[in-house]
Image (cartoon, helix red, strand yellow):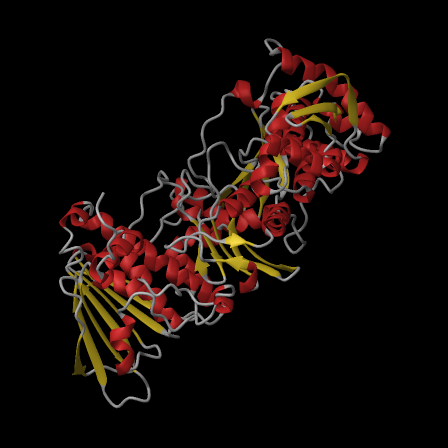
Length: 629
């Protein structure tokens, strides 16, 4: 066996570079983060040949003193932490002291810097071949410029893994986009092959911030976004979340920052997905730009060399705060919020909407009339013949469930039986100077499927089944919460073989499981007995439900599995109970449905995530008939 030997500094740095420097975008990320940590108010990034030939990052930050220049390129040398206490409450973006050493080991690096107290600047040059630092005087304003040339010139195997120039630059552009979204107070410029791709001034006001968001994420995102700002228990969450009708086919418009650091975290992703659960169409992804501010001592950023992952001290508290904030924000969305985005995009609907890939100018996102998958009339308006056994049970138990709700003062019988409530508003449209409701007033019904309503904005088309389905669903959920979730004892307890970890978890979370309607006892080291389940889920797969709940508790510290299954069942009941196609409604009934939509949470989507209404503006109608031309 070979003797143990100490690695040379050059080889050690190249090994570290395998973790830190994956591609040119990784270099840009590290250099821009250093510039931001130095207090830069402007960062200029210049790229040639996708970053393989040249990466130049210039800032106007505090700079580096001449005596510290050689040390800046050494491994484990940093000015951002000194003690273990500093590491436990990191407030800067960088802190490992590995980036510059790793980059210089696989490139030809030149660093020029000047501090405010120095009369002249100094330059240090390093090549990956020998790693010897050469210092010389230079001309440079206060700040720092780092040039990285011929990336991976001395590691040909790594260079072969680089993609095309366009692909590598797309990664660089995405990196700059993230940094620009994280720091509104800093100006950014991005050039590629001498061409200006992005030029952003510092954003001081809320309007300037929205303009930057629109420039980087697409104006359609801002037009369809809801602003949120919430604080609780030392946490603050603010930013922009898109309406459910503005969704993506892939998760390419999701930015989450913790104390200014962009992260990708499973806990955060689960909380967001849970908040959008019953308003998003299948396989669609929400869009958001969110900022979480926490005490640096309560989050560990020293989890991965790329610093994209974090670990929260109280993950359950953070998860619950994010979920409840987003859930409340989406519930508060009303038709007038949708109208703002629909009206802003009215000029782009005559052409087909396609979701392109990232372009040099930023994101382009679909509008509210985006590519929704088509749903057949059979799915939209189900009929009783040919139902599966589970659907037959749901249909037969539906009226019994409604009766139990009525006894507790829940959903009214007319709504449960798909009867439209009496009109609660004036049928006749008001005078021009009177206040008009967001969805206007009904004027006709089309093919027994759609309600046509007139408003000052134009023509509003409502899918009456989808709208009534959401209204019924929300009333059923509210009634269920008011009556609490009832449990039903099992005649024969269900025995489950589980791991010791799962058994201990069920034993320690007994009270929480009881709150979910589940009574589970540990009867052996690896055996559980299920004695009670929620009465509403008596036909569900109990074993799979319990295992899913335990899996959620292990991964996230809590579970909403029972609530999800319960809501799925309520959604099916609401779908069966909603008004069907070819049902002729009177004008008062149509107006009553419109008023209920305006007062109902999440009324912009049905239980399956399909839109319930859309707006055809007067300008669109004028274009159809060539008016004004």
